[in-house]
Image 1: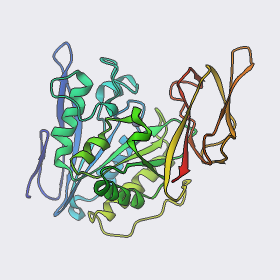
Image 2: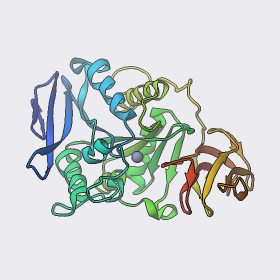
Image 3: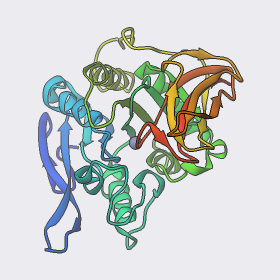
Image 4: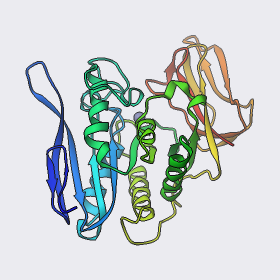
Length: 327
Ligand SMILES: [Zn+2]
């Protein structure tokens, strides 16, 4: 293919192009656009979608994309094409929030979206049908607040697509969590689910942190992304190990702890620590300082994160831990 076209971008071989997907309009008729960067290689190869900031506080992937597209990858030496979407949810991004304030929906729970639905459903539909449909493989960058270690998430359904996604995650090189939807039914409707349903292998990368771009995380993100591109044959060279970040090896899945009582969380471990089933991971104390709950590990495993998303004060049902365990 000589020219590559997506959104309003049209790029010649060996060139980089910039443009938008127009997604919605504000009450004053201003268009709201998702920015697109397209790096179209000189030679044929796979088309890789790189998407970031579907959740507004998770901006580290935006910087990973900037370095990949603007500094590291030379389109003349690239086989295939990168479609990069550095801000997939402009409404959540503008408010630095997980969800679009206009409708309160979490974009990564509403895929494949709806063409004529509410705002977030339309965003998801357009990302999938006007953007991702041009790609063969996907990396979707998210982030956890610290303390956390970085990890990749792979949906292993359907099995043939899941196996290709696992190979991408192995090349990326950090801790990899295999998730079955039946174990986390509250996480249906992700971009990876929608991509896998149409045969496009996809990995979700949980970087660090919220509302900050941590340099170690950005560097790991760039290295991992280049590793995936080498694995897919888009770039020459050997994959580089992720030796300077914590990596838990082996076949792992994830379980969560959530708060029963409300209060202030005292974290008793660090992210990356190995813990035993029944070991207390956190104390929750009330405003008088009394211990109201001990949060214990449901597994022998490792602490991936204390994803205290809103505050170190939690209410019933809020996440306290993400934990990895061997499968
Ligand atoms: Zn996210």
